[in-house]
Length: 282
Image (cartoon, rainbow, N blue to C red):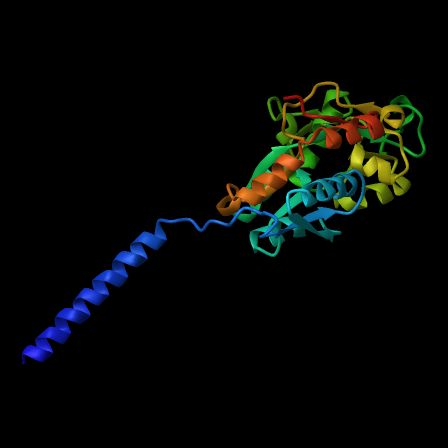
């Protein structure tokens, strides 16, 4: 009987110890050893593979080698997949989207991805392969705009700002086609995947797009826009490096974020793309 009682007591003590360990573990975040010469680290990043994203990331990759971090780059051709891949832990970071796009994507997909560092933004305007001025555009013309809520709202705000349509008061860059109160010239506003905007430029009367896609269409944003944003809408449309909330404070992730703010990265944008993009002022 004594032996049995002793075993029961030992079992109870063991279970209590295990429970205590479980409670301690549940309240502790895993940490990652910072990269060093003895412990090189690989960080996976997703991007869209066209300028200036690819040039920025390759420059950052070269700089991070000095810190014993290997930036493993994965290119995507669909702007919804990098956030899904990040959320599913297939990659550690992504770099392709504005803060407004990230906010809308989180809301629509019940995700909690976070912006780590803010980088560049650019000219957002309306382009035409057929017409040289907005006054030439006829009634019923087709206007292609990005389909995602962030850039769709920005496009409609641009059209509203220049009197092509009238939106409900107060919607700003957060409006949708349902918020259009007046469209006197009966423009056909067509929403398309933002990756197809350069193609839409060839097929539509007018196309609203940011500088990144205008460059793909061989356009010069500072010269070729028929109209462009006159007012600047805060920080919503600066491109951000995004991470998962559970890894944003990781030492190696923070080193990557800091590398995006190196002076040579800003110099690349300033000297090569100064007529299309601008870096966020600190």
